[in-house]
Length: 274
Image 1 (cartoon, rainbow, N blue to C red):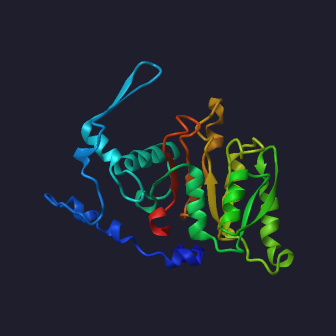
Image 2 (cartoon, one colour; image 1 turned 90 degrees about the vertical axis):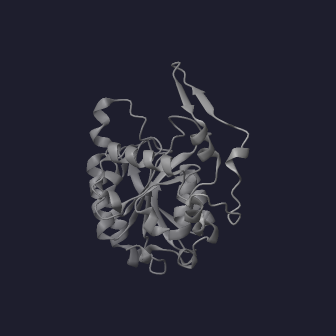
Image 3 (spheres, rainbow, N blue to C red; image 1 turned 60 degrees about the vertical axis):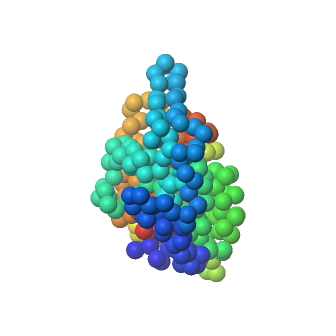
């Protein structure tokens, strides 16, 4: 399904020989020197205890601590992935079947954005964004050689009619530039405008994305920062609306927990794209 979206670099990627050894390490009694895994019994930390501000404590026992300190699969710590996927399914109630999407852990949602661009964009390709848009994303676009084109916004965020006009007139207005295959958006508390897309606009934008075969990169680090209960219906995500696997959603713990901890990225069907 995604081959038409992949970059030339993505088509040339081969599986890591070291990662292919991982299943062998689970064989009882197996001691492998091939993958360079350290002996977990030699780790200097035996357990971890975290005290929260309300006085409650979280204990990571020796077994969990060893798992946390050891190398893990490319997609992240399996137990963390399981929690993150359950969290996503509970909070966003996606229309896609559980087997049709997956979770990947990254060191921040911006790393997830860059990795996604790396496998989707070739130099000279174009990306649609809100105007204005997040400056960190512009840096990522520049690094992969993409051209960004802004879609006008107002106090409710990206204007669907203007998005439709740009795409319908693309071959006329930009005859020598490839038609965009990606739309990058920060739908909640957009940085830098502060605008939040309404549900009606999200539904319109998603329909346009289907019509023009766009992937939606939903960068949503502020989604959990809801100040008013009546905003809940408006904050249904593009991930919730997704019917055919065209939304890559990036979530982050940086705004609600800590900058120094791992953030979560939930690209739709990431397992199939990478």
